[in-house]
Image (cartoon, rainbow, N blue to C red; front, top):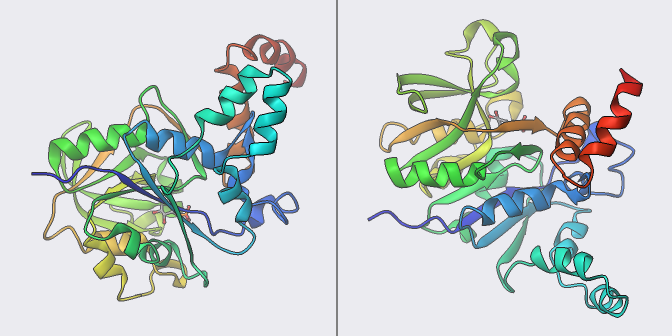
Length: 289
Ligand code: G1P
């Protein structure tokens, strides 16, 4: 029987250099899209997939992330006194069960694979999801839930994938296709940030994964890959000979909020999806085009 998917790991140790000076004293995962920080979108997406336990891989200067998911008694009392029911409900809705958020410090920036390895005690022998909060998803069904459903169907490892133009494949982990079944693609190999002319396909991994705990054993070797970093993609590739490994063409849209243009586009897309804001945004947009 398949083990249920209850755990998620979220690497949040990155420096956010592309958003300086905004990220000098503010964790990049706390940057808001409309009125919610990126990290909260990721947590809500995971909860919609039945995830209950969270591990944030943090670094220095990231304490605001943990504060964000704590109960803010003074704020709640003040809101209650002022009859701000809606705001109070919004705060309470984000609460995670006491004890269900763990943090681990990465200590040294050795790459995404190293960050995930840092969560090994949290992961134990269980399957786990990874969400990279920079990748903001706009999906009717939570992207992590789509992966969780696929995991229940296929067992083993499932990563969210999308097609990108050929000349952009060198920015991503790329899959080597064994069999393309449409929504699901079985995978025979993975390459991290290959040169454009050597990429096995233009199907790229986005920041959503469901992985089996055995990946930790491969990451522990600390082999350096693309960019001189310990790459998650290389650790995952080693799972392929012994475990099912699929890519899922998820339904929805991804915004790369690690990039200024992607982040700005996300603001517009998420504002337009909000009934309380859409009309006002539509009214001013033409002034800028
Ligand atoms: C990471 C992964 C890469 C993946 C990407 C998705 O790269 O290493 O395989 O395609 O996230 O956003 P990064 O964006 O951290 O360079």
